[in-house]
Amino acid sequence: MDLNLKDKVVVVTGAAGIKGSIGETIVRALASEGALPVIVCRNDRGYEYEKEYREKGIKASFIKTDLTVPDQIAEAIKQTVAVYGRIDAVINNVGVNDGAGLDASIEDFMRSLSLNLVSYYATVKYALPYLKQSRGAILNIGSKVAQTGQGKTSGYAAAKGGVLGLTREWAVDLIRDGIRTNALIIAECYTPAYENWIGQMENGEAKLQAIKEKIPLGKRMTEAQEIADTCLFLISDRASHTTGQFVYVDGGYVHLDRALLPE
Image 1: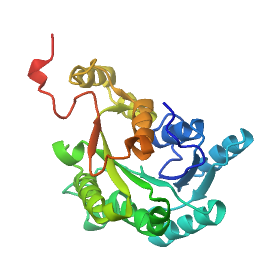
Image 2 (image 1 turned 45 degrees about the vertical axis):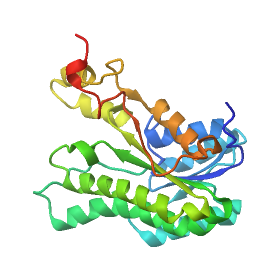
Image 3 (image 1 turned 135 degrees about the vertical axis):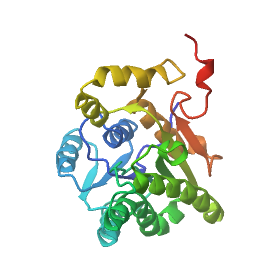
């Protein structure tokens, strides 16, 4: 299926993670479809990705940005439009489960909200005039933590809950502009960061297996490519009548009854 993403300018926040991370995989998938990805992230790794894509003839861009600083986000959007003249989609992907729990300082809690929620608002706010011109799409990357809780991560949980609220609010607010807004919700996705987390545990392999056993579909972790594939569909015009939705790519982890899992 042709997703008609060729030459579409797509801003992806937090997408300069290491190879195999969700943001990096989304950008790679966009490039493979002929889209023009703009990586907005603070990690210098983004320069390497820009160079790699440019050498392949793909007009990708990296704009180094601290996503906790709204003025830098505004400048990133300004630079994007200066280079491409348009914005067709925003994928708010940045997210750090930073463990700012009830024992954290108020400052830590606020920093968590700044990165994991306020950056979503700021990115869309500054991109909105251009999204209105293109009748573009917004996709917010969410987490099961907003609905299931996790413990010891109040900031991240509150932020991800806010992301779901903004998704529905923007879907209503922007419907007359033809702008679709959806959220993609992740549960247990096997990324390099997840692998590192497991590797630091004394009983990491056993923990990983226990998690897999609780995932109804196939008893396996979601793959980053599966996340990316759904992202691309949701921002494409193939999903032209889908807005205000929470789309779970989680193998049934959040909603299906574990008691029904076969032995």
